[in-house]
Image 1 (tube, rainbow, N blue to C red):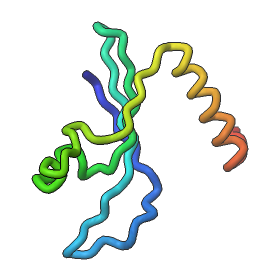
Image 2: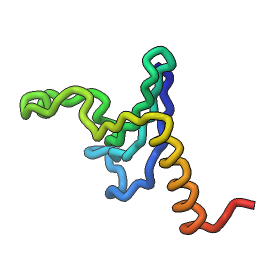
Image 3: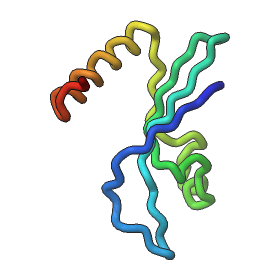
Length: 92
């Protein structure tokens, strides 16, 4: 399954040696064979839960998952373009 990762704006405290930053990401994956496109928001380090998270019952694959069809993807693209243009101005 191809995958793209987009890094979010980091609103967390500065990285230290004791506590590295945990950047938010959006992971986009798809499969032509199954016709699935999936959008996931998560913190990057949570690709594999820590032993403590596993003990707490946090499932593998932790994050917010959305599976989209073609219509939903087109709506998302249209809404993202509108949000970008209104927040930053139109691209020329």
